[in-house]
Image 1 (cartoon, rainbow, N blue to C red):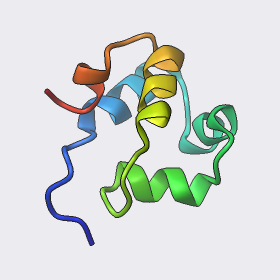
Image 2: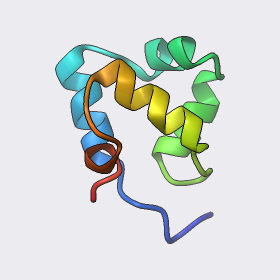
Image 3: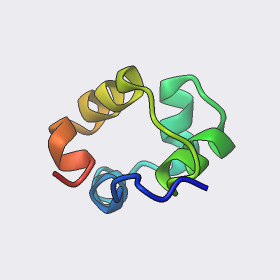
Image 4: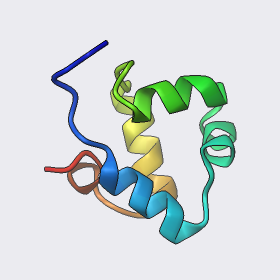
Length: 68
């Protein structure tokens, strides 16, 4: 398990605000639901292109999504 990953609480909050489930967002990203869940929970690392895509989908900044 990775211990130095940033908190993705903002990502979860924006998903909820915009009405996205993990399954829906994973479909938009073209990745497995389980993979996205592992990444949001800090067990796997996001690729930069995935975070950029999520920021575009949720219409917010990358910095905000990853809690900086």
